[in-house]
Structures are given as C-alpha cells and as structure tokens.
Amino acid sequence: MRFCSETEKIPALRSGNLTEEQAFALRRHASQCPVCQQEMLIEDEIERELARGSAAPEIEGRVIRELKLLRLADTEKPTRRFYQYLAISALSMILGFLIMPYLLHFSVLRSGPYFALTRFVTLVVFLKSHLPVMFVIGNALMAVSLFLTYPRFRRALLSFL
Amino acid sequence: MSSNQSDIAPLVAQSRTGDELAVRRLIARHKDLIYTIMIRMVRHPDIARDLTHDTFVRAFRRLPDLRSDELFKTWLCAIARRIALDHLRSERRKPTVSLEETGEILSAADPAVERRRAIIQHALSRLSPRDRMLLVLAYYQGLSLREVALAMKIPESNVRVYIQRARGRLRSLLKGHEHEILF
Image (cartoon, rainbow over the protein chains, first blue to last red):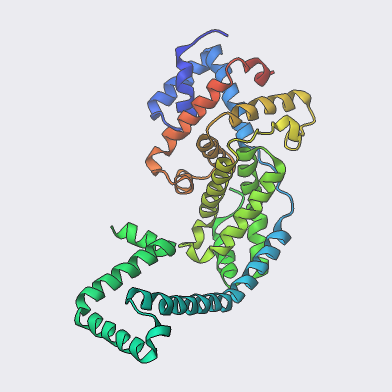
C-alpha cells in the first residue's frame, strides 16, 4: 500500500473533529488521491460493521418473572428484618447482662440481686453525671456503626466531607 | 434512532406504576441495543443474553432513581456499561471465546463478508472495554454526543476526541488487513 500523510486526518474527519475548511480540503484531496480513497472505503466498512446490531433473543418473559419474584421478596423482607433486629437486640441484652457484672467486678450469683441492682444504679448515676461526654461518645459510636454497616449513610457522609 | 424519545417517556411513567405491558414494550424496544453492547463487550452470546437480562432487571428495580423519563435509554446504557465492565473485571483471568467459536453473530451468507466481519470484530475485541463501548454507543443506533457522554460518564466536550482516538486505535489494529476488508 502506498503512503499518504493525509490519511492520518481521516479518523478526525469521520469523527467530526475537523473544521469545515479542513474537512473540505481533505475531501477535495481524497477525491484525487487513491490512497485516501481506499482509506475512506475502509472507514466506511468499519462504520458499517460498528453500526450492525445483533438481534436479541426473547428475554421479556424472564425479566418480568424475575421482577415479580424480587417484588415478592421485598414484601417479605420487612418482617424478616424485624425478627432479625429483635434477635440481635435480645442477644445484645443477654450479653450486656453477662458482661456488665464482670466489668463492675461482681457476680450476680454470689452478691445477690439487690447488690447487683445497686451497682447498676451507681453506674446510671455515673453516666448521668457525665452526660455531655456520654452524649458525644454515644453519637460517635452510633456514627461509626452506621458508617460500617449502612452503605447509603457512608456515601452521604463521604460526599458531605 | 429506532425508538422515539417522546414515545419512551410515557412508557417509563407507566412502568413506574408497575404496568407489565409497558415494561414489556420498553424491553422490546431496547433489548437489541443492550444485547449488541453486551455481545461486543463479552463476545459470547449466552453471557451477553444473561447480562442483557441483568441490565433490564437492575434498571426496572432502580427505576425510582431515574431522574428524567426522557433519559431512560442513556441511563439503561450506563447500567449496561457498568454490568459489562463488572463482568469483564470478574472474568479477567478466564480465557475469552472467539467469535468464530460462538458462531452466532457472524452468520453472513457471503463467506467474504463473514471474513471481513470477523476481522473487524476481532480487532474490536482487542480494544479496551472503554473504547469498545464508546464505538458501539456512537455508531450503533447513533446516539448523540450528549447521550454518549451521559452513558459513558465523560464530559460531552471530550466525546468526539475519545471517539476519534478509539477509531484510530481500531484502524491501527486493522493494519495489514486492508485487502481482506475491501475485497
């Protein structure tokens, strides 16, 4: 194949990146240059192939079936989620009652329920007297847990920052 | 453009209310476009069909997120692009199947035409997924520059330059095959 430096401009011409004058000059040149004419024909073939589509198989029924199933799953989800939250809350309470005496250095079984209650009251009084600090720590913990578990909150926070 | 935007918007609005017929019509109108994108991206008819299905399922599930009903087609293309790229990323290590092996989309009557298509398709498959997607969107159904920019998430002012570069890269991959393409 012979060489013509103008062929390099043909992709720009076909993509609409030349000014009117440049495009006119290139077309005039191409009408007399066999190398550019051949390049134009190749570009025609490429465009024809790119414009050729493929007929898709029948998928409408399958998509609609899946959408129906997903919609059904969505309606069931809140109930399932409610029981999940309930189970997690119950587990947290049990763990709290098991861990708290250990942290406060006493055993509910050995010290008796009255002593345990007074220790809990002491803890509540302590927390109350440090309310601003607890408020900040509580919110920070909540933000961290939301950030770790809730993608929409994470995205919103990151976009805000 | 085969599907008129003014026809699409009412169908999208009906789909939002759960109208099954509207959903069917929207799929029927856009499935060839999405399937063509997928087949160019993944080069396997079965996978392309599954990814086309996934695109529509995801689109109709996320229909409330669509800001303007007129932008449905562009938005659908953006979803298809994301699904195709995710698939390619997950399949990066697996061997690809050539179009000759699949034997579905190269069914031309003339062997010379078939050969020409195979050469161009092979060169197309060697482009980056981004270039491939750009060329399919720009030339198949001829989306406007704005639509291509929205689907590809690139600035509208750069679309022409990106298309030109992608075409240049495709052309350089076809070097040495000029005779087969033209004759």
